[in-house]
Each structure stands twice: as C-alpha cells, then as structure tokens.
Length: 147
Image (cartoon, rainbow, N blue to C red; front, side, top):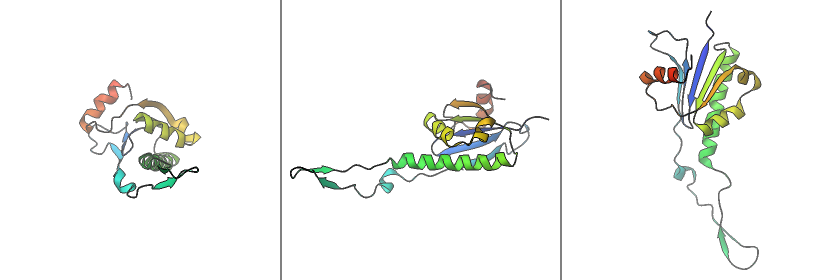
C-alpha cells in the first residue's frame, strides 16, 4: 500500500495542501486551499501611536508600535495551517508531509508543529511556490525530487 504523502505549499497569506498519491485523472488533487486576505497595514494601524514627553525637558518624541501587525497576521495564519494538519494527521489522512514554504513562514510553521507532526515531515524546502500554476506544480515537484 502506498503511503499517504501530502505537500504543504505556503507563504504568509496563501497555502495549498496537495496529495501526492492523487491519481492522474483525479480532478481534486488539492486537499485544501487557503487564501487569507490580510488587512492592509493602514487599516490595522489606523490610529497613530501618538507622542510622549521625554523624561527630562520639554521635548516630545514619537511613539512606535510595539509589534508588527503584518507579522502577527502571518503567525496566526501559520497556526491555522498547523491546526488543520494536526487534525488531519490525527485522523491518519496522511503519514508523510513535505513542507514547501517561503523562508519566514517555514520558520513559523516549524515553531508551531507538535513533535508528532514533526516526525511526519520528510522534507522542508524554503521556497515560495504559492503562485505557481496548478498545471506546473507537478513538474516543479518532480524537479525538487518530491515523490
């Protein structure tokens, strides 16, 4: 019996989960497609952070945001992806996983994976293939020696 091998292709806003064991005539090789619409930075940061007085004197300084809202959205998206993979892995829908992700997203995914899911990972590739057309993906995966 062929082992169930899935491929996660992701960046900070889009992801596809593919089945490598899908038959050629299968019209649905994608297990799931994610496309998160991030809020634009100006929507998130609609209010200016403000100004403060220096501790000495009367000079004022601009305050800075304490975090990067775009990065927080990407982290949340990584959590959504890992939760989906964990759920499906626990149902034995796949036993092997290849992760192909934009480098920063790959780091986020690694951090959020449980030990069990990490054991299922057979390859990690730091590359953004999210915009690769579906028709070209098979050839690209073949070039990367993913089977």
